Image (cartoon, rainbow, N blue to C red; front, top):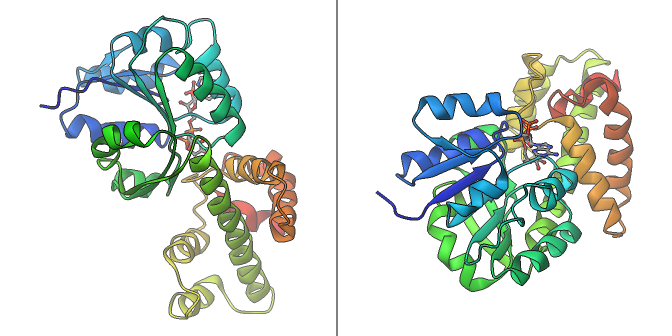
Length: 283
Ligand code: NA7
């Protein structure tokens, strides 16, 4: 039995399988989710739930946050019953959501002022990698706090790496998702070109998977296209969000800007489907 008491905020597609690894590892866990029905399966396992982030942090040593975006982070940290409400100190708050480096810096300053640590620790990988504890975790923040929680992070992923100061994890994640957005649109265009000229997706993806261009991503998303399965492992609305955050960082990235426009245009109709549903937008 591990003695570090853990709180988990955000029981979405990623948060559920990730937090379950900590249960399996024997950590005492308490959870919080905005929509309370998502806590039911945890309660049925005998796992405690808190009424608010403020309540959760009072009874935990380490708090994980895995939610949608900057607004969700702002609500959870600074909302009426947010994490920053109680006068507690000595906690480590690990924000695994993909958000802007700017909001991490803002929240880290507030946490540090209270005597708590803040680490930004977004992940590369989606639901399958979360289920397999095969995520790649990129961390920004204090090296001592990172070393303290590294054994816990290693229950969630195959690599947990400190990249730099606060916000560096977010920056690395947005750089990686820039490539993800471009590659997914590239695959969708490649299959579309082939299909519209008489080669079906199965044949084309078999060729791709055996070529030097093959990769785990091309394989998984190629299968999704062939099987017409667009259930979200990584929702299209989230790549639109990430490419917008990347654009706000101001680098010279013309391909990413084009991809951002594509996903932005596709979002209204396809936002809840998987990123590779972008192929339906292409025609
Ligand atoms: P999901 O499955 O869309 O889950 C999103 C979670 O974020 C879910 O628990 C939401 O609670 C929570 N959320 C969203 N907005 C808020 C606000 N304003 N306040 C509190 N909680 C909120 O996302 P994934 O698990 O696929 O992805 C999570 C992150 O990983 C994201 O950054 C991606 O870019 C990558 P709800 O259940 O809706 O009440």
